Structures are given as structure tokens and as C-alpha cells.
Amino acid sequence: MFHEQLFNIPLEAQQKIAIIGGGAMGISLASILSQLGIAKVTLLEAESIPLNHYSASLNNTGILHHFVYGGHFSTLELLFKQTILFKKVMPDYVFEDNYVNYVAPNIEGNTAIYQKGVTLKDVSKNLMEIYKNHINNYPSEQIFGSAQELVQQIDTEEILWGTGDKNSFNGAVKVKQPVLNIGEYCSHLSQLLNELIKEQKINLQTNHRVTNIELSDRGFKLKINHEENLYFNTVINTGYAGGLEIPIPSFSGEKEVGNIVKLKVYGLYKIPENLKNKIPQLIENFSSTLLIRGQYAGIIKAGEDRLAIFYGLEYDQAELYIPLAKTPFNLPQNWISWIRDETNYFGNRNETSILQAIQQGVSQWIPWVGQLEPIKLKKNLQVYPGQKPANELEVAKRDHNPIRYHYQHQTGEQYIHIPGAKLTSVVYHSFLIIHKLLQTYINKGILTEQEVKQHLIIDNNRTIIISPKLESLLGKGLPQSPPEKREKVMRELNVY
Ligand SMILES: Cc1cc2nc3c(=O)[nH]c(=O)nc-3n(C[C@H](O)[C@H](O)[C@H](O)COP(=O)(O)OP(=O)(O)OC[C@H]3O[C@@H](n4cnc5c(N)ncnc54)[C@H](O)[C@@H]3O)c2cc1C
Image (cartoon, rainbow, N blue to C red; front, side):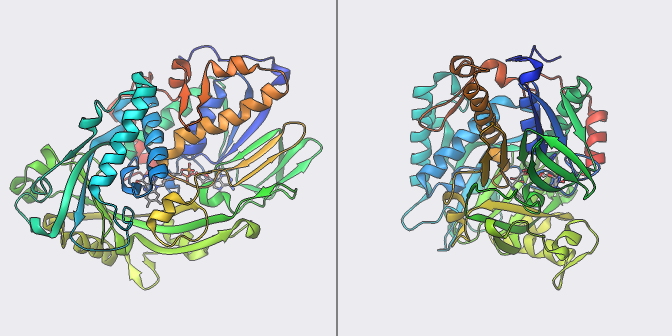
């Protein structure tokens, strides 16, 4: 099914590489790496299945983010480049929506896009400029049409449909921006992983929680479930929040500042029949909508008649700053038991009251939201690299380096810890790490710079350029499995 391995170096030169964590990041990285012919790849997952119910990859709103962080040009540019790369390598069926509406409520406040003097118009202009530069440099990457088509002003009526007050908004724009269907995306990654396991390119080990990592004379020694030891040349920790619980090997590597871990929630709601009859556009042509300024909130398309909704005041239920010097860090037990549905209460709140508060909050601006039927609360941990931010804008702009800890031994062996960032960044970061790994083979004279450049280049403007062969490694050409099979996978993964 997959083409010949790209580099095909001799078996004895192939490193044994362990990837910790079978979330979107671990699976994407393992899939690309295992088809290059440079390493024997083992994927270690703590739970009984990869992409499990407790991972962030199954419990997020799936927006390929950029515009909302537009108060900071460099962040907007990087996230947009990450979005382009993501869209380029994934099959179309994993996307639920192609547009995001941004509406600015008529109040001041401290939210993602807010920075004194920055308006929707400024961000639109910046985004168009970034896109123009990008397609000037890479004309084949015009995946959002022309720059003018990328962002368009809209009438708030397209969001309110006769409900609510148009004057309570300061303007609205519609941006061509992909939103993932998390069920289809996870089902696709699961299918890709299974194909690669069948072809013996990835060795998946489930129920393998890494509990310690140390350097030994046989390379990195990984303790599994506090019992067994496994040895690898290189280890990449993509355990996200759980990955912060693994002790950092005690060597004098460079220590970056730390990470913020947030306990986040959003609600899943159904569009009831009476609302479908009243506002048929909700089914026919609703685009995911984000409220920015004042109240950062969102209504995201999550399937035929399902919407995922978050609301600023409820989005973060708790948060912690974890300096790297404090690693390993045990995540709070009450957070974990709540995420695992072992309790219905967090603090003194129950899930029904949080679902109602989300709905009430957003319906102040967009009244039809109040008529949706709550399905369930989705909750998970989100990790941001960096120090405690003063506001949402800082969350985005603060630190672009996803690698929190990198140790490279003189023999070329590496430990890379990449705990944070967004789903938006998963593809970009996978190629970033692949690029780093390939440098080791160049340094050892196993591959030449030229051989690598044929397939993967990071230009001096942070654009990642990949060859058509690399473009296919995340399963773009894989035929979609039949609906019954996908539904079965989604049920097993417990996505909705
Ligand atoms: C509420 C919410 C909304 C979000 N919305 C968006 C959004 O709209 N757009 C966006 O771009 N991003 C969003 N994100 C962020 C996004 O979900 C994450 O960036 C992304 O899913 C991280 O993927 P991952 O594979 O690194 O982590 P995960 O999916 O959490 O996977 C980590 C895996 O590692 C395993 N693991 C952990 N510790 C160990 C160990 N010691 N040994 C072995 N295995 C281990 C875990 O079991 C898990 O399977 C959101 C996050 C949350 C919580």
C-alpha cells in the first residue's frame, strides 16, 4: 500500500527509536518516521488503546487555529503556515468545516485577539499579507484560493438569523480556515496506524506506561510500568500532559522554562428538530463561529446536527504552572478522576450546571444557542509551553519552540520532549522533529545533506517544504474505510 521506504539505509545503521504517547502527535510522528527507512519505530502507549478517551486528541474542538491569535504577527504567521501544511497532507474527509466566522462583541476585554488597537480589520489585513507572501514564494500552495477570498467581511445576520441584536457586535469576518471532524480524524489516524502495524513498520506496545528514563551504556533505559526495562537509541516524549510525569534523565541538558497545564471544558450539543425547522440554515450552511473580544467563546460544527461550544468564563476550570525544574510532576488526582468520568463533580460544580452555564453565556450574544440540547461535557488537559501568561494572547505568542527539553549525546542519541502546543501544530512539529533526527544521520555520514534536502527543507522563514513523497506519508491517498467501520472505530474510541 505504501511506497518504498525513502532512504533505506542499512539495517545496522538504523536507530531504535521509541515514541512515548499514542495521541495525534505520537501517531503522526511514528507514521512518518516508520516509512523513511531510517529507524525501527516503537510506539509506547500507557493506556489499552492509542487515541484513547483520556487523550487531548479526542477531546478538543479541532479548529486549525491562527486568526484568533492575530494580535501578534509572528504567531499568526507561524500558525497559518502550520495550518497550510496540515491541510496539505491530510485527506479532505477529515475536515468538518472550511470556514470560521469571527464576530467581535461590542465590549472591551482581555481575550485572544485583543491587544490595544488591534481590530478584526488589522488581523484580516495581516493574514492576507502573510498568505500573499506565501503563495508568491510557493505558488503551488494556493490552497485557499486568492488572498481576497481568504477573508471576507460578513453581516452578523449570517450568524444571528433573526435572533439577537446586530448592534451588540463590532463587525464580523468569514475566514477560510479548516476545522477538523474529530471523529473522522481519529478514525483516519487509527486506520493509518493499523496499516503500518500490519506492514510491521511500527511496533505498537499498549499498556506500556513509561515511568522512568535514564541514560545507560545500552542507550536510553525506559522503565515500563515500574517493572520491565526497554532500551532505545533515541526517545521522543509526546506524552502531552502525562509526559510531564516522566522524570527527565539526569544529565546536563538545556532546561527550558516550563509549561502551563490547564483543565479545560466544552460542551457537545444537538440541534433539536424544532430549531432545525425554525432556522434551517443551521443544518444547511452554518459555519463554525468564534466570538472574540470581551468573551472568547465558540460554536464549532462537530457533525451533521452537533455543535461543540465553549465559553470564556467556563473554558478553564483550573490551571497550574509547572517549571521544568520541578519535573517529574504528578498531575492532580481530582483532575484525573474527573476526566476519567469517575466523578460527576469538579470542585462544587456538576456537569449539568457547567453545560447550562456554557449555553447561557453564549446565548447572551447568539440567542438560538439557548435552545440546543446538551449531550455531554468534554474535558481534558491542555498544555502550553512557557511561563504563566498574563492573557490569551501571550499564550500564543510567548514561545514558539515546542521542544522543552532536548539532550543529544555525542554518539548522536537523543531525548526530545515535546509536551505542548496545539493540534494545529501536530503535522508541522512532526516534520520539525524528523528534520532534527535526519541531521544525526547527516552528521554520521549515513545520509548526505542533498539526500535530505530532496525531501525536506525548513526555509529561513520557518516554512516547511516537503516532497510529494513525504506529503503522502500521513495517509492522504488511503481510501476511506466504509462508514460502518469508521463508526465502529469512533464508538470504540468513545469520541462523542
Ligand atoms: C478542551 C480542549 C480544546 C482544544 N482545542 C483545540 C483546538 O481547537 N485546536 C487545536 O489546534 N488544539 C486544541 N487543543 C489542543 C490539542 O488537543 C492538543 O494540542 C493535542 O491533542 C495534543 O496531542 P498529543 O498527541 O500531544 O497529546 P494526547 O492526545 O493527550 O496524547 C498523549 C498520549 O500519551 C499517552 N501517555 C501519557 N503519558 C504516558 C507515559 N508515561 N507513557 C506512555 N504513554 C503516555 C497518553 O495516554 C495519550 O494517549 C485543545 C485541547 C483541549 C484540552
